[in-house]
Length: 280
Ligand SMILES: [Zn+2]
Image (cartoon, rainbow, N blue to C red):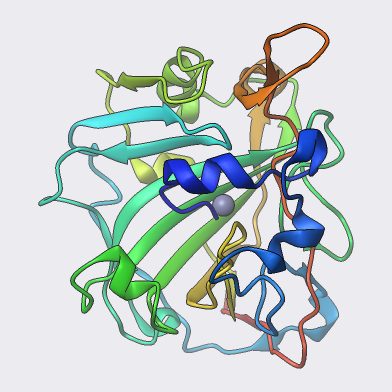
């Protein structure tokens, strides 16, 4: 996932570490970083090692109606969907989230420059073209900063997408607006309805759960991860919209901002952690 980036963070780190930036193999050296910790994300999920836990459930509130005052923003590392209405945000709760109540903060994407990679999580060693993260903060904390200091601070729903020849009509309104935020810090209010359920895969169950971290610096170990087992699909033309996005790194040859491309972190050791799966 990618937390709301402050200007200072965006100046220091990138994924590839080129042009004098700090790349992911060195993220652990950043200030207040937990990137070298033992509960890091993403991971490669081995389906033959999943632990079945039939009691795992997620309750969705506000996921079936349009998000109020939605907008998209290019933050230089990804494209982010947010709501400027801080009062009526969608929520998730339930046993899968240890009965804590989490409210929606933002959703954003990780992608690759080609179809065979781009996702952060892998399943049995396989990566997917795109991964969506729906980030939620535990409502028992007053601020995002406070949540980032607690092991149950955040919950993230992760959706893996594979590329298809057919466009996905459910994500069309989001993609139309994503096409309009090419450069870093560009923002666009969305006039069409955005329903979060439409961004999830067709089958919301089964899902997998484990305890991990943010996947961008400072890699705080505060995230309850939910990864859907069903794989969603995105049209190749829609996927290419992401590949046009430009970040804050300037290409020395052309003098233009470089494309974001390959904004995913590599997988981390489980270090003894268990990954659970819900019933179907
Ligand atoms: Zn992310």
